[in-house]
Amino acid sequence: MKTEKAIFAAGCFWHVEQAFKEIHGVIKTSVGYIGGKMKNPTYEDVCSHETGHAEAVLIEYDHDKVSYNELLNVFWKIHDPTQLNRQGFDIGNNYRSAIFYLNEKQKELAMKSKKELEKSKKYKSKITTQITKAKEFYKAEEYHQNYLEKHGLKTCRI
Image (cartoon, rainbow, N blue to C red; front, side, top):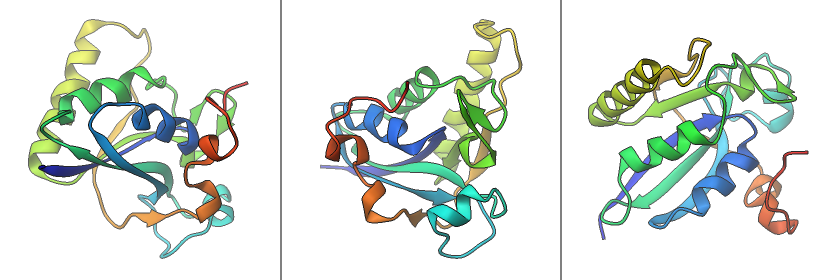
């Protein structure tokens, strides 16, 4: 089995994690924080909007069963990439839309998929999704991991 990793931010990480857990070929997900300036932030730190971190999901997947492009397609479908620093009622830079690439191939594929989506004119507003080199990913507190599953929920959307 050839495993690879991917990191996406698309609003509340509970929703994002659940969407990717349902994909055949995804082996493991972890919710956490990335893209900020503080080491080892807590949920409260990130929610202060002072650290610059995004709520994100680290995905480990079997490349023989699901491709990075397929994961990108899911990413674009599960949120509104035109909303700057928010998704629905969740507002703040921690809810931003972002792809954190782990290598140059992921960067190339992410940029290509974003350009294709822009060309499609699916959205009237500009796509605000950031495509950024991944730095340190800090795993969120245990109570956030598999949150919806632990609470018997399918979605966190009202």
